Image 1 (cartoon, rainbow, N blue to C red):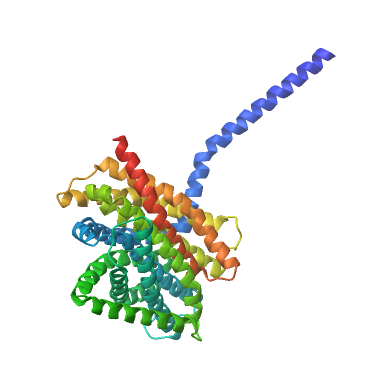
Image 2: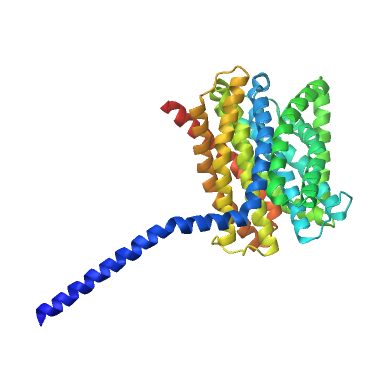
Length: 441
């Protein structure tokens, strides 16, 4: 009896093990098919996102490359005007922050039907244009002051506060003249043409901002030298700029329309973003000798920052529109729609980061400078980019969700804050990864 029971138990265990192994093998064998089905479903759901964003980011890479080439050949200005590097990342980021938010707000209004894609005057456009002008003037002055403070704290040799303020303010005005109509054109015409502005507006705006900010800074430096031939003239111009800026800020805070809402929510965020931008500039300024000795890295800085900001802003704009339209629930755990956006951004990152590494090295060699080598350039860009993007996915998600839960408009918060965090973090990660990889070879 006992032997029979033992035998039956043994057979039962053996059968159970065989069934377990069979089911396990069956599950493993079915994984490729399930993976293929998942990929097909993912591509079906995100085809337009990947297609439109990839086209936008590729075009933007050209604009960022132009900015990188300009920066890579700004050695004279960087040496003649010490401390200028401190303000460059903040100025580039500020343009993307202000007009990226402008484009995101227009995109949201287009999605929910409160704005027509026709290129004509409306209260929404007028209020957004006014708010963007006010924010540009205020943040240009604040950026200059913060840059000078950073130089003093870290004992960097630098130009005077008067020069910082005038260069930043004039460059901001030059850029705004170009950025306002371009932002409106991209947002309205892309929507009218059946494209989703969330996928293309912010990266295009960031690239345009990157491209025009550096020439605007060079032009403003030349303008300041031209009109600042006497210290008294500089003093008068400085006072006029401060008065105009304060008057604009007061009018924005006391306006009786949406300008007040935009300025009040955006100013503190953009002020914090300016601090982050100048910190990034401080990091670059501290590594100026390494950058000047490696033209590829100097060229890669705007490319890497611009493409990273584009990826992050696409995610921020999509999450913001999803929250406004109800596609995304304001919960602190990413769900299906959010995860699809995460995977789309990672997919785009895997494609774009090696590409910009290749472009940086190619342009360096094309101008007759010594590069770091294609393997090193591609490795630096891809490794630094993937580290950065994996961090920023969660950062953007929680900024979007928390701001929406607290009654704030993510369009005014997410893009400026997340792209400024991206600028400062990307600069640090890029420098650290670059030094690590270059020391290995």
